[in-house]
Length: 135
Image (cartoon, rainbow, N blue to C red; front, side):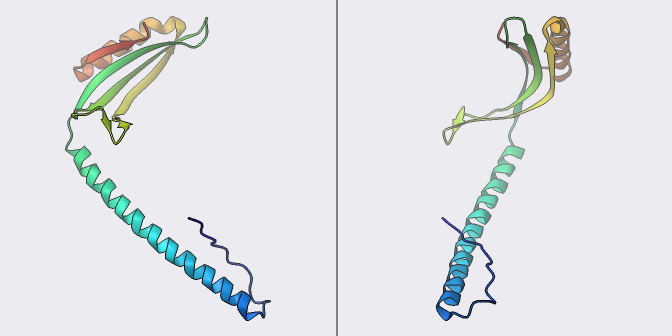
């Protein structure tokens, strides 16, 4: 869908056909924009409905400790608290179900013990398990 949305100068034009063309294009653009606005209003209402569902959804807390080797000499540890929604499916509308993350910290190489200690402290604080990946 193309929207011209150009407000060209027209005061110097004294050709009625050309002015009519400008007016027709502006009218078509207005109609298209009104259609788009209606679609966006429907989309926004669906977002609000889903937000109500999310507000009533229970979440499971999991501390993730991920070890990544970016280079043969560089290892990074990523620690975060993941809040995963407790829903029946892993995919909805062909998209993976996503929760949200909190308390993210990254540790480099020799800070491995600090990463483990931070993961343990988050697990104790939020009463959840630690999920390790990349070890």
